[in-house]
Image: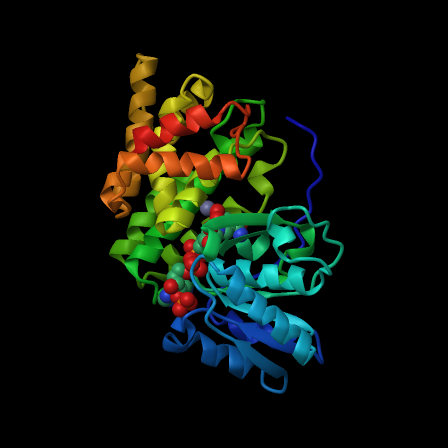
Length: 384
Ligand code: NZQ
Ligand code: ZN
């Protein structure tokens, strides 16, 4: 196991009816900016619950944060925070709203050009405090320091990470996920699954705690994910999916082990250029990447096939083939297609995606840094 230093400062407040705890979690006298997306929170009653819980607080609103939040939109919120002397940010929504609000928190406190934050030229020394109410289990953003923002004018989807933007608290009420459309339920399960894989499917470093935790999360998602689609009002299923998604990317399983993240980096380019949902890009890239990297990931692919999918073939190549095809079949079972062609993207599109990777200097991806542009090209070609 590698050395590590780990701290996750986010207080998780989990369970039915917990939105009412907001008044105790937000600092007294805070002037709050409630940020949200396209209005789902008004239809499912979450907005009303939040406003009721915050009675007596001064609350302003900023709505319209898009899925794959837009840099330009977020800058408008930054202006509002400055003009209105907001002291606390409260995103209520999915990954896009929370990520977008983390960016607002950092940009408000940054003196230079806010774009530098996403090109990682900026050194962040402070950020505004935030706490969140999560409505879509998927990204883990509710208790991590990551944020992904899209600049539509240049088709760039870039991220930043800072310990300064961890939410101080995250309210996770599984009942608020009942209203999710099946596509978003599926996206969430696939995203969480791939987060685990990015931290697990590398090479062994004799870290059985991390491995067994990761395998437990994968098995949970494989078991509970389809139930969330077939039995959408089942509280226990929703609760298990929600907690699994948080655990998948709150830092814990990734401590002391190598990490990959190439699937995500390649996937972000696909979203930026073609507009696919984040999880759709992962479902397309991961199976192709596992096959391309099967030699480097051999030990872990065998372990995964045996422990997660229960495969027992003597022929190891066949076992790896099956582990990859079972993974693909799981995504398809969740209703997320796994080929670029399923989204109308043809082989000719690969060049532009590779150019985007080059433009963003994503030249040595993966746990060994051996996913060069040529390898990314092969992965994308195999994903068509
Ligand atoms: O905008 P509203 O009206 O709220 O509707 C949203 C949106 O249309 C809707 N929704 C959310 N909760 C709902 C609901 N509809 C009904 N009932 C509810 N309870 O779902 C749609 C998608 O929401 P979005 O926030 O975009 O989805 P998700 O949570 O999957 O977030 C995706 C974003 O997170 C980034 C992705 O790249 C993408 O930009 N990621 C962030 C990460 C992080 N910060 O650690 C890691 C991930 O790998 C990922 O990259
Ligand atoms: Zn993801």
